Length: 141
Length: 209
Image (cartoon, rainbow over all chains, first blue to last red; front, side, top):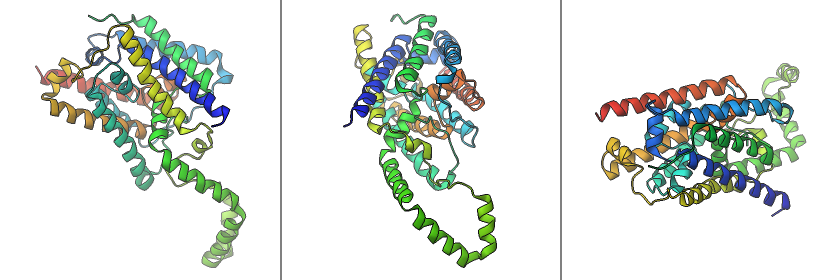
């Protein structure tokens, strides 16, 4: 492996650990906390999320010329995809990052969520290549 | 009762992660993109190889195309084509600019696995770690027996995986990064998935009553 590749593994890994830690301490791994947020009886985590967006907005504005252009566009899948995701999130308590946080928390059934996500991602890519073919703008990482 | 961070520390922490990702990796945070890279690594590699081959044989290819076009449609079509002169678009699901990224897919896998490590260490140190066979008693009350819970998680997970790929982003990509840049598609996507999650959660709440 080249040095650049080792370096990128290290960088991704470091942010990953940080992300997992922060999500855990906010309480996103806890289905009850999440459910309380979704039935709007406890807005603490929603405020954390909204606050993070607000802070990021300011910081990213300050760093404006260093921020890469994002490829996020309206496309036929934006609304139905988000809807499916929203329903799935309410059912499993997991978004694509939270499933790892749930597992790290010791919630064993999250293994099923993970299998579901892997299959869902795989299935979408298959169907997309065959039937849809438009540009989804999935996070250009 | 487990003590979690108050909302403002959480906000600072999450924003810090976004910033760290930008500064270290040079891109904006987006977890479903990493998922796509990890799940589709084999197809991506095949496509990249095909692209490289195509780039190497571009002259041959365009000669062959030209000859074929002449044979099929005659001169007129050819002139039309040349005036349009559109760049070749990949007909496949994968963005060409995605392929140009030099980051190996294993780095994305590392990112995802390290989220697990970070969560585990933090949960362990703060005394929240506990092996559980259900997500929570509330979750089991909503979904019923063990196997029903498993089935719900499997299908719910499929919806999450399928939906985030279809929408082109998830909570981090659309929600954190996209909204912070006020990108219209991301604002709409975030609104839609939040509202659907709230709607379904309320419905579940009503149904178990």
